Image (tube, rainbow, N blue to C red; front, side):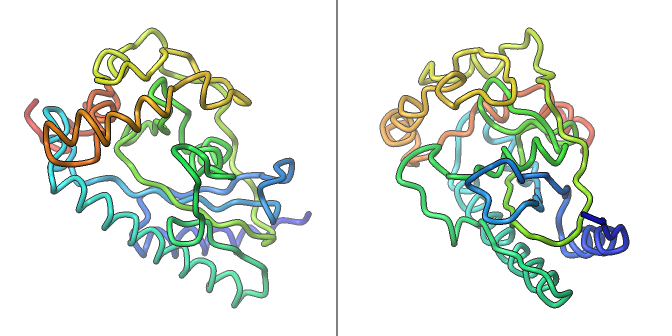
Length: 233
């Protein structure tokens, strides 16, 4: 494929100008779940105030921000689909509106898979995407396309090292402490059912919310983000 660097630069500028904090292009040509050979991934951080709350427990503000971010990202992916279609290419949104999953962690093409292939980050021991800029305190969405966009360099190795902050913080003991490598299954890293049980059991009894998020606030990369943004920890 002959890549169109101007198209890629213009698309990334369009995404950044419309609120994407991070964006990249991934080669998906070897994945059956991708209807088209390339993925465009976007990320947006959760509000720092909401992340601070998660150092103690989730709040209604976390739930509201999570839903609002999902809606924002879905809207932006749809705009990017229109942008690429108007340029003459196919594009298909993979958003919380368009992809239905039968259970926890069952998306046929997870956003975080596209994100690692686009170089946005790696999979942490908590099974969330860890970005150098924001840690796991981001939300993701993506599209697939046949536009001639040059893929970014993938990240192929975890940078979590010996850190166990998320492992120690998990009330479900669902995080196994595994260092991620490409090709690993979710079950090698996380007991997603135990994690989901905490959402609907322990956390609901504690806070009235069927959400958790404690691990993402515990991550040192999240802590660095908060310090950089002026939060006193």
